[in-house]
Length: 94
Image (cartoon, rainbow, N blue to C red; front, top):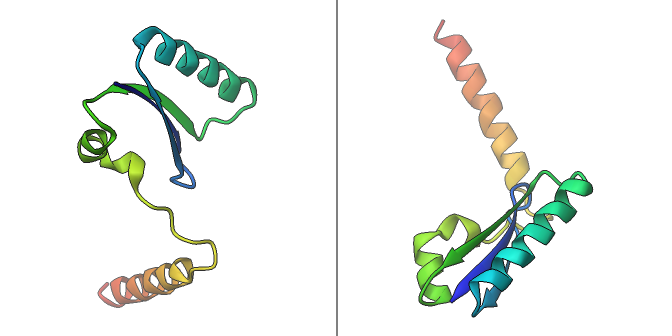
């Protein structure tokens, strides 16, 4: 099987379409790449992979299938606080 992956590098959202035909998968990939480029959607990555199953593809290319964090999650704030703490620590070592 062939899998067309549309991956948003910013949000980490991935859409996957399965094809039984390589030419159809590549043609769709080219059209989507042209669409994203024409619309200045440079955060989008479009690629075709061949794999025995979607589960096999998820094992070999897991970065495309990471669940994005919910928008209302406070992880961003915690990361910012952690970075400020790290900066204070590093400055105190000088």
